[in-house]
Length: 175
Image (tube, rainbow, N blue to C red; front, side, top):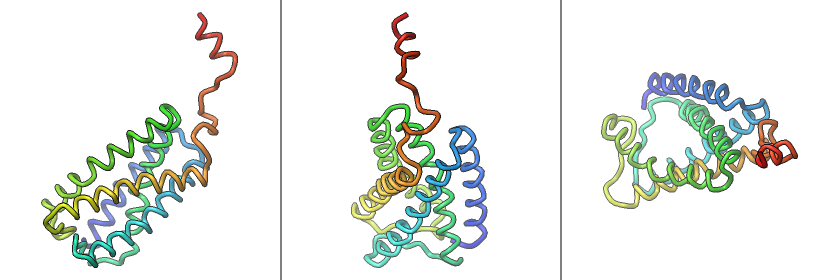
C-alpha cells in the first residue's frame, strides 16, 4: 500500500472516530481507553502481519513507512472499542460476545474482498489457514482492544452514562 491511500484512509477513519466519540457520548477517560486499545491492537496487528508474511499466509507490500500503517490501525480500530463499550453497557457480556462473533465472521470476507479489488495492498495465499488466521486476527482485534480499554477506563457500568438500579427504576417498573 502506498503512502497516499494510507493517509486518505486514516483521515476517513479519523472522521469515523470523531463521529463515534460524539454519538457514544464517550468521556475523555473512555476515549483515552479506546485509543490505548487502538495502540495495543496496532502493535499486535503489525506483529501478526509480519508473522503471517513470514510463514507465507499473506503479503502486505508496504511502500510507505510502517509507522503510517500502525497509525492507521490505531485510528481505525479505536471506534470499535467505543461501540463495544456501549454494547457491553447496554447488553452486558452477551452483547460483547455478539460483537466479537460478528467481527470474527465478517472480517475475513471483508479482507478478501479488499484484497481482490486492491491486490497491491494485500495478497492472500490459497487455503484455509490464511482465512482462519485472519479470523483470529479479528477476534484478537476486538478482545485485546476492549480489554485494554477496560483496564484504562474501567468497566462500562462505571461510567456516568450507566443505567441506575436505584429506587427510581424500581418504582417505574412497578407502575
